[in-house]
Image 1 (cartoon, rainbow, N blue to C red):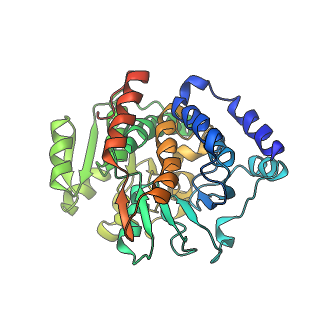
Image 2: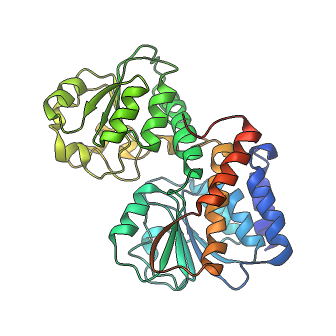
Length: 351
């Protein structure tokens, strides 16, 4: 265990401590009472240096931890090798089959069909939350996505990360360029608003009337997703198109792929949102979220409160009497966390 802590400390050296105050506070708490001792936990979120900092809380809290990473991102093999050499228990996600765990900590519900935890699960994404809701599960799942906390990552963090990754990977000047964003939920809203720093020519395509109104009020050009003819006509004029709907195959199912002649196509969802009508090579990063192809997929200050809540879900599962099915992360805790985060970083969770 000493080796794994040394490895974690090396990864923590990449970040300013001021960027993760919540995880630091959580670490001090679990070190005192070892709340996770005796728990076998399967941890599945994108495996990055930031994630390794998050894992420290679980290790110090006494968990028997097995670590994997979602299929939609390419892991850093050298980082995985170092983790295993330090004593970390790593299993590729495709090799997880009906093993026994007390708690699963999931992303995009990729563990849903692989194992049934004896106590429950914690899901971090909207895509995964919807999958758990649609399934008949015989255990409780706490959704971090169903809280204001996820706005910090999903709106502020992912929006910033998309623009930073797009500029780095394409080396393009996007000033004044025509951009289209499918979806105006947390991720789409953040992307559209961060793009405003570079161009005012942004078109939002959305299905829900509530989100259409929000996008229009924010000053964007808005098209209904049901208006196939105008969506296709507009898509053919774009410099770049990004999907952020959380719906698999949404473009191929609803539109003619030949209309999508933009210079760049980018997916920011956990699913392949462009779908079967598009070859992998025709979409940036082979249809996977492009921010996972740069050094910092999301800046640590946006991840910190979400990681804190994801870890805290373990405590909630142990001590709350929850029925089977999906439960939102408690709103009273989320309100406190967001308010504290805003006071520290002087940013607002809602754009």
